[in-house]
Amino acid sequence: MPTHLNFQPGPPIPTPRHSGGGFIFTAGQVALGRNRGDHRHWRCGRTNRANPHNVLSVLAEGGASPADVLKCTVYLKDIADFQKMNDIFSQTFGPTPPARTTVQAHLAEPTMLVEIEAVAFVGA
Image 1 (cartoon, rainbow, N blue to C red):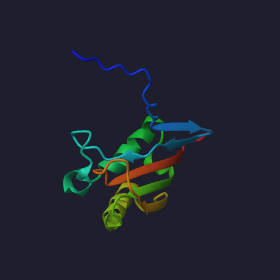
Image 2: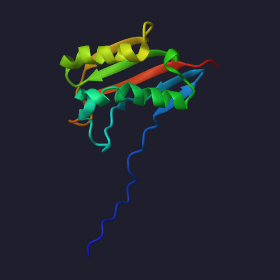
Image 3: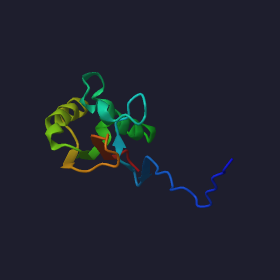
């Protein structure tokens, strides 16, 4: 039986967040379905809030709440999803949302429809 030998280390696994000086910076977070490779549920009504909640979960692990978020960058596969994303963003952050940049982008996997990264401040 053939054996596969791989002498090179795999790529480093990126950390979901880093912090310093009271700031928390997240890596881009995508919505993951029950099967972690299924990113299509952004369009599904019952789970369309998963993506902001993923980034907020990463921030919460670092001690930040939604009120601590200063800036988000949202990458959309299809800019036609802007209004849906905007509605979800407004529901998530309320009347005083963080600053936000939204761009259309080719994402790492073809099934990914949205990716969000955030910066929060929790104090020194």
